Image (tube, rainbow, N blue to C red):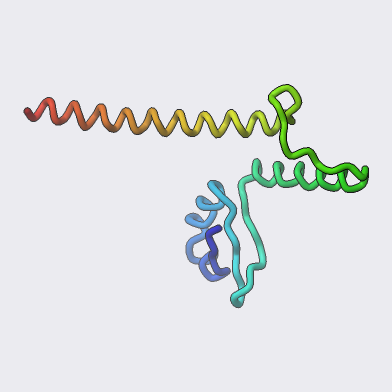
Length: 109
């Protein structure tokens, strides 16, 4: 997790907010972490996990940690699909960069 001071927040708020849109960031005051900023989707996922853990603790059941596609929570399936999409998108960007480089090399030859 990236860390920024409160002074950094005054000087570089745009950079810090941009970083917090991508991943959680910690705000530190006098050497101690005081706040965390994170994307809303991550915060909502955190809230769901906490609620599930509390519900499991109150029911006396242990939380299930392994699922099949048939019984997985919809949020887990959505996270899995989003992760796959990120991998596909990165592979396509890499392929596009290679194609551009190959085209330039062909033109120069």
